[in-house]
Length: 348
View 1 (spheres, one colour):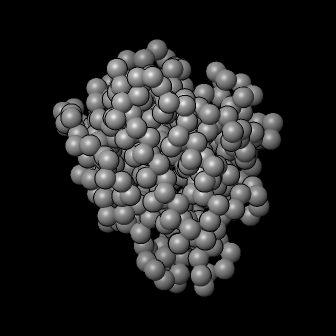
View 2 (tube, rainbow, N blue to C red):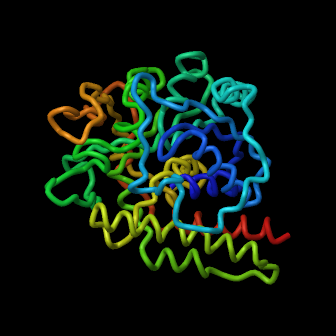
């Protein structure tokens, strides 16, 4: 969920959020941009620059996920405030990302993608020198399957076993949004060695159970807690409840919804927190990643085939890192700490 990813990036003391580029995906570009600005206003960080990016994929029509995230792309709460800042259109998102990254010392800045990869693919196609400059690229997307992990992947009536969350084979960010953009990123071997992929096989281990939901809602009150702070707790709780309902209804995951997006941010903390925020990759295994692009977006398997499927083969000469597990309890403690930080900020 992007709201939690923004919260983590904005309030973890080890991270400095340079900016956000929005993109088509769960909803239209206009709506995802408005949602981003609303979340930043809610958590007291309207100062973070927001640049609208691509409104559609490279070569397909834009398709959204109203069944899961609602028509707005962030349904479930009435507590999202009206944005107190405006999106920045000059420079455009690609140029803004380039400027922000190149201004950092070489080998220090990360780029984190929690949605469609159109913006990121355009960035590296336009400015290939950035590959050498950044420290890393973290991507939430894809689904491996085949016993890669033992995470509960859910099921859809009449479809049998599946490991994708949009089709039997594919995850939404890769399949429905822009498989060609994803393929262009993973086919860049220089970029691949700096890339960490966070697939459903990992995110489905991080379920927002009822215990987690209640902890985020209650937590430890502060003497300076304001109505705004209590509303912020309730807002994030509402979003989790809505997500829990859709995941239960659509995929049969009743224990709680997986929290996908912030895990792609949390992996940046691993070098700083060590084993406390460890991501296990079987001693350093690396992978070649290929995205299948044959097929059309359709409800019929014979038309769409396996388009958007993430296919991996083990590499002995460097490649994409794909963690198989992580320290889930530590992750939730970090999220709670960031929420408390936001509560303090908007209560001052």
